[in-house]
Length: 145
Length: 120
Image (cartoon, rainbow over all chains, first blue to last red; front, side, top):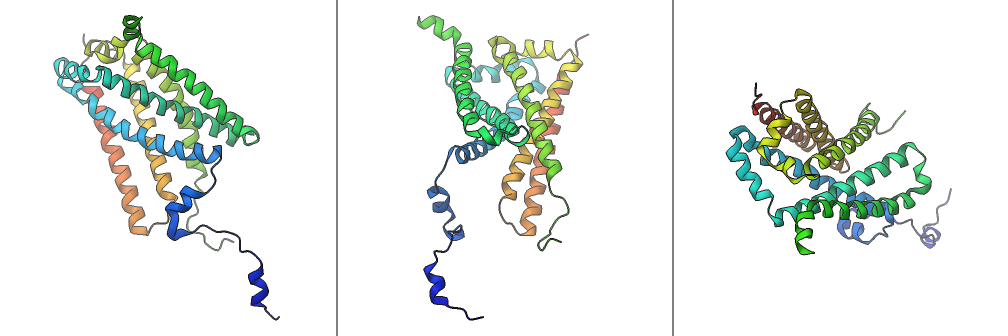
């Protein structure tokens, strides 16, 4: 069989992943809601496991009794830490709601409506985030108004 | 049958467990947040922790939450590493480090919970 390399060049090669420029490849490809969900699920997941380690460390003064523990907790109930805690809840919310979305996609035919589920998870997440803010800062909010 | 078969294990078991533990963690997390933030004192004082820890079932729930969270989290980290092609020595090192870290921090969690005294 004769091969005509000239005519092969007229066909456009399908674009494949460029391993050497993986950073720009990852940044440049068109991202739909599913890609964003995947990226954010990873970032929030890494943050949450890092927080779990930190959480065990920060509760370790429980072994030293009441004074040590309450001293440690005083630092965590300052307004700055409470805002950080609130932002942590945003990470928990995204990972939980998107996790539920993944389970629905995997097990309940959710692939047909995964984009709607993604939007829904953002709406539910923002509502719960604001509600948590109101609960956490209710003392401060009462002082403001 | 397969040209590039490296493992007989497809990973489907681990995938199912990741889904199940994830759903369980959502339930635990709802309880955790209600307990810690519905009343600010409940989560942040020694007295409240001490009072809760008088119930052994509460210690069991706490430690189950810890073990499930650690498993789900570190399995997730390992899944991220598995997305990349690594030489065998790197795979073994990463997996060993993940398992050792996980076991060490779970053990620390058990020590912390069981250091809280029973008042009687």
